Every structure is written in structure tokens, then in C-alpha cells.
Length: 44
Image (cartoon, rainbow, N blue to C red; front, side):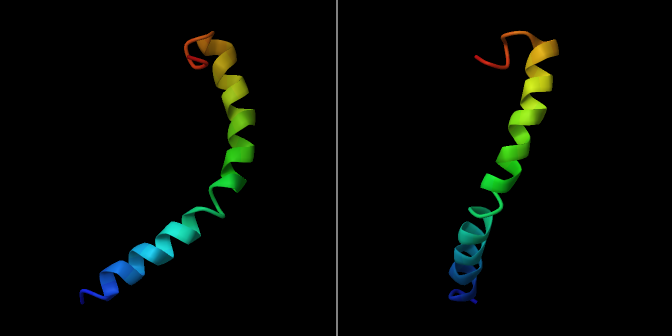
């Protein structure tokens, strides 16, 4: 059980890194729309 916990975390760390940059590319598009209505608060 103890070795299973670290194994699960290790798998989640590397697995989250690759998918992170992908969704981030789409985030800028959504952020631009959010910043427009928000004004300059989102930028801060």
C-alpha cells in the first residue's frame, strides 16, 4: 500500500505536465475573452 501511493503520485505528476501545456494553449484564447469584459483585473 505504501509503495502504491508514491507510484500513483509519480504517474499523476508526469501525466499532468504533458496535458498542462495543451490546455494552456487554449487558455490564452479564453483568457483574451475574459480579459475583455473583465477589463484589467484579470491581467493583474
